[in-house]
Amino acid sequence: MFPGHLCNSSRLDFLFVLVTYVMYIVDTLVTQAVSTIFSKQLNMLKVSTALGLSRITFTSYCNYLEQLFLFDRLPSWGNSDYAKLGKQSKWYASDTGLLSSLLHWDMDTFSNDADKCGKLVETFVFHELSVLCSLQSEFRLSHYRDHQKREIDFILESQDCLIGIEVKAGETVRKDDFKHIIWFGANLVKEKRFLGVVFYSGSEVLSFGKGLWAFSTAMLWS
Image 1 (cartoon, rainbow, N blue to C red):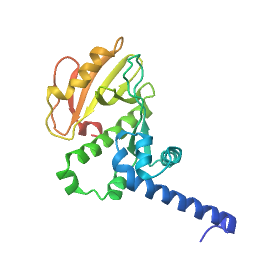
Image 2: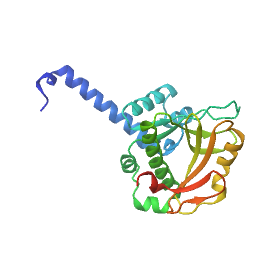
Image 3: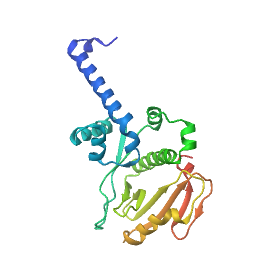
Image 4: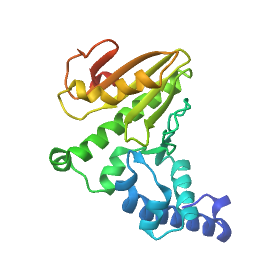
């Protein structure tokens, strides 16, 4: 039963409308578009067109989902005059359990679909890095992508240091996994100390040259 101060028609009507609207947003956006935007850059026009919504309406839905802590927005890295930088943010689900339930993902899904498994692991890493940034305010978190399709999952930056981070769901790492990180460090990092890191599902700490390291993803929460 509602407390007395809520038990009047206007308050109950408002709560009903609010809950109904939230459920509509979740059904419309999360269950239909989440597989498109999950841990990816979000092209508002492309996704809104696919859903039959106006860009303005779809943008409002995304803002509501962010305010409800269902999704987090990761800005693009832009501390450069490089003309081919991408500008779009990436979006991550705040609750991977809820997300997996909505999309009907189970252990068989992750065992048989490397792409979905990779997205989920990347989201776990995003949450751990976000916690780090909230505890140490000198760090800023972003991602990198340019029009040449060079992409780095995460950029962790402080006043004097910059770390490029890639995430792999597999148990092996190759030097080729660092190719975009190496390019980024050689071309866009000027005055800061630069490190390249790949998180993977193996257990060893591996070196791939000066300032290039592979760490077990489990190190983030162990």
